[in-house]
Image 1 (cartoon, rainbow, N blue to C red):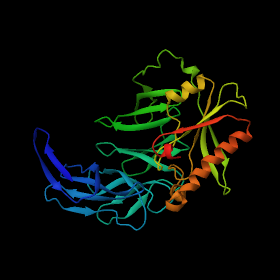
Image 2 (spheres, rainbow, N blue to C red; image 1 turned 60 degrees about the vertical axis):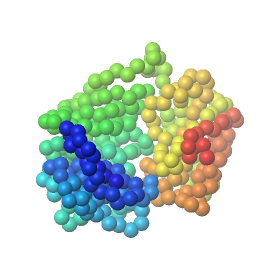
Image 3 (cartoon, helix red, strand yellow; image 1 turned 45 degrees about the horizontal axis):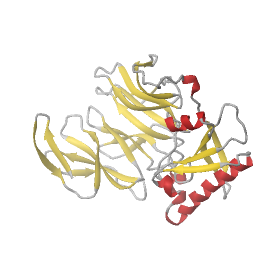
Image 4 (cartoon, rainbow, N blue to C red; image 1 turned 180 degrees about the vertical axis):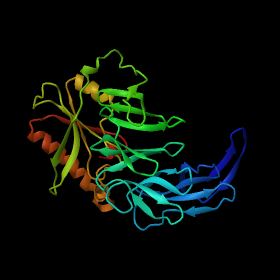
Length: 328
């Protein structure tokens, strides 16, 4: 259920008690409403506009089948919402939802997942990041949804976007295989990103860290499975390999800073991260390839990772994983 409490404290007041699993997706700009997400599964949810005074919840995203709706940002005029959804396509796209008609206008193509959306307080700028083989591709728009020159960020994964109150600067957290997470900031619309924090690497020079290669290997039904492959500097074919399987299953192994991975590399092990069928980041169709009775097909993908590594000369292979990765 949803409760509200004043900024000065006091007792929480129940506003909406619908039952089920709900999360807050965004605030209305005048503070009188919330955008609430009702979750049906990991890949299916609905958005509601909840009036905090009356407790009435208006459905915003009626649909059939599975569809995801996230990152709801209400425009200052209260007339529309910027959000990310895979309703009418295979990938999660940036869209504008008209609150009077509930019509969607798509702002990005159906080829990569949009994973972060942020709107400046005055509605001047809109930023979105797309997942491109695990790395972030950051896009900049004006408040009307028109594309502007994209910011040039260092290669990595950018999250936690936040605009300054005057909309002149954009802050975010950036991580990469050779960068542990740090806060960065850039002047808008075309300033150079600069790092504000210096996270410790425990005295290890950055040049000692390794970045992965993006590979695809064949599996039992002719598909190609995407994976990250951290290899040793000498690239020896007989290197022992640790295969690390992500949890979820609706998740993705991405090129973030991974201390355990770097430790294994320095101890002489290559590390392989397969994104078997059922993983996110490669489209809705790929995510559903392991549903229900197809679950063991993802295990076959994992077996074919071992076959592929063996064919490359890696005769010693171990596997690890947590949660769903433990099942795998």
